[in-house]
Structure formats: structure tokens, C-alpha cells
Image 1: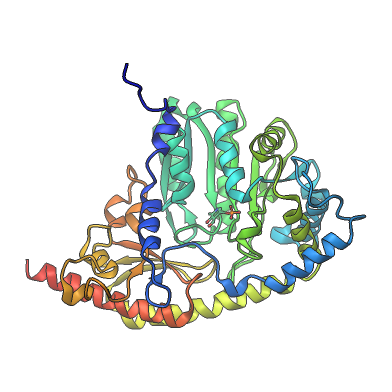
Image 2 (image 1 turned 180 degrees about the vertical axis):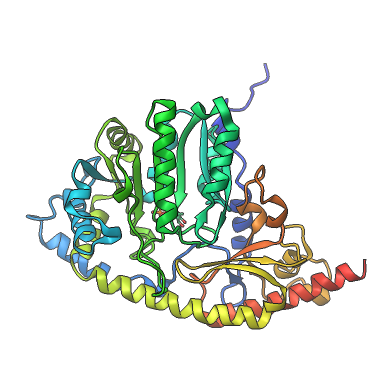
Length: 448
Ligand SMILES: Cc1ncc(COP(=O)(O)O)c(C=O)c1O
């Protein structure tokens, strides 16, 4: 009898082929030449923002003080290290992050994910039944791709310069009619990835109102998750201070997801969730236990120490670095690509620019993309086979906009450029190459 392959679940089947962005990044990473190729695609933080020495120092302190940091190399509890939870509580209250006070946190709890904010977001997909999820377009493609593999239907609503457009959201909700009962949650990234658009406080409040009204319409709490991955990285001083969505929440439906990845180090894998105590939060804690007991306790204690010792200066330093980079990169973009830029988002927070080009396609089959990845097939453009010219990678808009959404057409001319990982001289070189790629793309089109 013929033996068939391992029987996969629907999720298993959907996960057996890498997502388009994973494929793109893997292809690029395989042949990546340090010092030659330039990666404006990855969401990596800038290495210089990671406080290597302080982390080493914190590790020593933690190991030297077992009376405070108990058994830090042993298993941890599933809600997270009590030290870290206390440090996060203090960090939010003392710095009035988002206007959070002692009172805001009354009746709410903080839980630490097994592996960064990502593991908490992933846990949500297991604890809520499949159904509709509402988010902004362009969307955080990594999470939305995960949701769709798990059988959720993502409805992406275009954003404007204040974040997800609540008027369009209301029309989409009205159009759903009876299907509204299938809505499971809202997922909103407060400094959006890929666009770095900052969700304004007004919009945030409106979103909480919409979710609150919807909850009373369907007779069930519909949670709204705010992903604050980049909310500590607002580096433009002219931006209004961001208010925590918890401050607008009367029904207990708001959950905020935070991470220390962008302000300390992604490698610590510390993400946390703040929200109302109750069955949902309990289920998140059990899920953390199921997938690995807890985040590594030593990392949690290191993070706790760092939050207690100088986190404010660290955040300032990180933001100063990104602010300088954003200003310089913006100037180069205007100078080099300006004539071809229809719209540009970002530059005030996080470390991405999201650019709409006029008349230049950016997808993986486009001439622009082929020029930058040196896959045109023309040696004069690509360079000799054994020594290709510098390659430049970015995230094409086609992967950031929802494939069934309203932005499919414009997405074909969009791209996300990260100024996080690479240093300024490399970014400058990459932008000059992009200018040539636009000229190449236009030349091919005018000769067709
Ligand atoms: C919107 C968003 N959420 C979450 C994450 C991941 O956070 P963590 O490193 O804590 O898993 C990222 C990382 O880039 C992100 O862009």
C-alpha cells in the first residue's frame, strides 16, 4: 500500500509553504553579501540602539542577587516574573505612559508572553473562535497572514494620516449586516507597520466607542487589541502625546500589547499584554504555559532590572538615533526620488517610510524590483554573474495591502523602506540605486 505523507490540518497545510514575505526575505538572505547588498526590507532594529553593555551588567546583577531575582535560571511562572510585572507597572505609571495611572491599572493585569508580543498575538488566534477580524489597510502583514492561515477572515479598512479611517470602518460594519455577529476582534497597530502612521488620540477614542457600541449590539464583548510595538518610538517632538486606549475603555474590552523589542532588544523576546482581569486573560496565561511555560526567566529578570535602572535615558537615546536617521533619509528621498513620489508616510515614529510611487510598479515581477535584486537578466544592469552589483531589498506594497481590500491597485506602486537596520551611508547608496531603478523601469515602459 502506498504510504501517504503526514496528514496535516488545514492550518498545517496552509503553513507548509512559506508566506510570500518569508520567501522574499529567505531568498535575499541566502545570497546576502555583507558590505555590498543593502537590506531595507527587514524590521530589525538598529544594532547601535541595543544596550549590549547594560544587558551584560543587568545579567550579572540578576545572578548576583538571588534574594530578589529568585532562581532566575529555572522555570518561570506562566503569568510572568513578578519582578518584571512590577517593573512594567511602575514604568507605565511613573512615566505616565499614555496617561496611565494607578487607577487605570485597577482591575487590570499585566501578563508576559512566552516569546515576545508575537506569541501573545498568536495566542489570541487559538483562544478566540475563527471569524472576522477588522484591521487597517495597509496591514501588519505578518500577523494578518497568520490569522488567515488559522481560518480568520481579515477585513482591512484603509487608513488616512490619522490611522484607520473610522468613517469607512462604520460603512464596512453596516455592510456586514447580520454577519456582524461573526466579528471576533479588532486589531489596530498604534504606529502602523508598514506605514508608521500614528493613530491619533481622537481616532483611538472613536475606535473604542465603535467596538463598545458593537459589543452592545451583538450582546457580547468584542475585544479591541491595540498593538503598541512602536508606540515608545515616537521621535518627532511635534506629535501630540499618545493616550493609552485603556483610558477610553469603560466596558473592559481594550487590550494593549507592548514589547521591549524596539526599545531594548528583540533578542530578549519580552512582550506583554495589559487588559481586564477575567477568563480571557486567564486563558492567555494558560496558553503561555502550554507553549513553553513562560518567557525565559533570566531574560525577564534582565528586562526588569533594565526597566528599573535607566530605561528613560535608553528610550531617549534610541529615539534620538531614529529621529536623526528619519530626517536625513527623508531629505535624500526627496532629493533622489522626489519627482516620482506621490505620497510618503512615516518619519515621525518607528523606522519605516511607506512610499507610493507615481507610475512605477514595485511588485516582485516589476522592472523596479528586478533591477534592485539584479535579476533583469541583462548583464549591463545586473553586473557579471559571479560579481553582481549591489542588491537592494524592500517590502513591496503588494504584500502589505490586503489582497481583497480597497488598496490592491495602489499597493502595486507602493513600498516599505526601513531605516532601522542599515546605517546611513548604506541607505544613501540604496536610494541612489532606487533612483536608477526608477529610470530603468521608465525606460523599459517608454520603449514598449
Ligand atoms: C506591529 C508589530 N507587532 C509586533 C511585533 C513583534 O514584537 P515582538 O518582537 O515583541 O514579538 C512587531 C515587530 O516588528 C511589529 O511590527
